[in-house]
Image 1 (cartoon, rainbow, N blue to C red):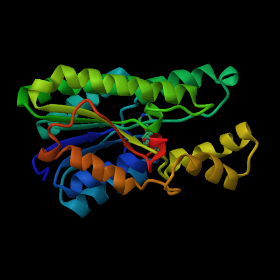
Image 2 (image 1 turned 30 degrees about the horizontal axis):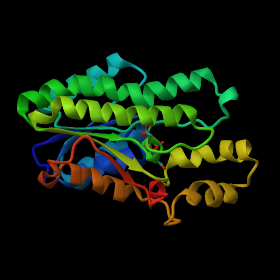
Image 3 (image 1 turned 30 degrees about the vertical axis):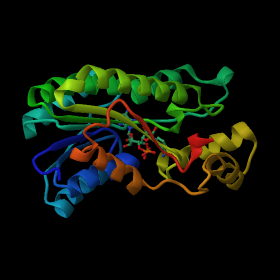
Image 4 (image 1 turned 180 degrees about the vertical axis):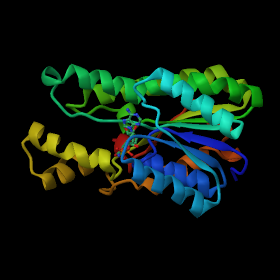
Length: 260
Ligand code: NAD
């Protein structure tokens, strides 16, 4: 379905982003992966995508804290492949802390990586999409773009912000064949979720099992984690012709969490 297209997925060295990169490659798109991690592992991930799906895959080390590096990532992708047709703004970090103790540097980093990086990537990718009259911009938001949880002030603020950015850009490019949507997963079992368990145990004085049952899955009526493949499949669907009229939408995939 996506042969001849190029997808840039930020934060795709693990978790949801890697799932999206693999799902786009499975549909025939060339992909640019991005993110932090061990260089040998990243190279193995990149090579595996090429081998498994017979597409081209490159790696951009752009740090999502840097607007200049993000712009360079998009320019390089356009130069290598001729276009950036699909952009998934997915990189994200989390920090869990009561507001009065929330470290200022963590606030700044979360706003930069989870929100501002999408602004930098979108502004760089939109001119090419406009010139070709086709584009798909997908922002990995969160159920936390729609509802809040305590102790996640920066994350919830950034995710609500990305919902606003999604709607705004969607209106600006609506007549140019470009759709802009936010996918809002509930809890997906990835390194990001695993890493916040110790801080949540501390902030709420709970055991690991209590955090999983009484904090994470308590929010989800299905009592099950959303899978990476389900989120990636949603992203692929948004790139289909069937989804051409879905734009400016903030779309939950959250096991019923935000229905409550
Ligand atoms: P993850 O930790 O597996 O992946 C995060 C990715 O972002 C990694 O590739 C990491 O290297 C990259 N990254 C982090 N800081 C970066 C930086 N400065 N520059 C470049 N890359 C950077 O986490 P995940 O759960 O797959 O999260 C992906 C997205 O999904 C995030 O935006 C997250 O907020 C969102 N999300 C996750 C869940 C969940 O339950 N896991 C739920 C809703 C939304």
